[in-house]
Image (tube, rainbow, N blue to C red):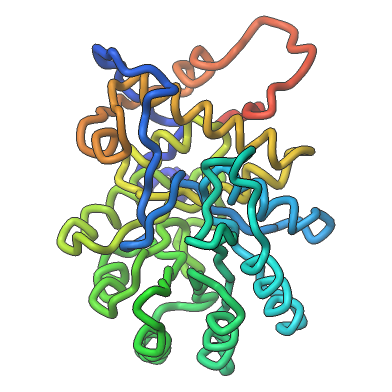
Length: 321
């Protein structure tokens, strides 16, 4: 038996959501989400992963749909600061994009990515000064006392209307320490020191559930799911598992049109909520039920024995082995 088979947990593709009696129509659902106490109009967040992709188009596509666009960390930190400054000062066309995530002046609200390093406290201050609403701090190393001290220092320096999310975390004990440190959200997924060697068989759903269980003791702090999102239905499962928001960067990086892809995710989420009878995200988290499926069930749940002539934007062939 392989090491991954010995480890326990379920990925999104190993479960299905149980349908419920429902009068909820997709266009009626409320997608309002929270990152800590920061309110978003959709539970989606993303940063650019592909360096060749147009980062501003990605940020705008996510923000126009009500989610949080996150400026990716860069080799030249000044480039990140300048993009945060430019995008946070740009105004959305709220007549055409009424769900855009904007402030009272109609300017985009934006996040910025940080990696734990010796200059991270000063970098956090610079990004906040440039206009970042949310800081997303990736640890990049095992969470230890030094990392914990740095997180607390950054959190203490933040104004009351700015927010800190930290990840990626799979250990509920680490999640509890981060919540105790006052972070707005913990990013749940495969940690840098995970016993799982890669994402292929990783139990993303189980990890989200574990961190979400810890978060129940902290009503103003939330969970962001990261990793394992192959279909728009996986976003539904991540939220049903306890996440308040979902990182969809992996999903977006394979699409030609960010705007179309985010629209497809939005539609899939709405359909899934109707399917489970949930008119808002809190109802989805508290009432949805899962059933485990086999490899054969996975194949049966996707199109098979047909020739697909054009791939849908929210679908990618995926099999377990």
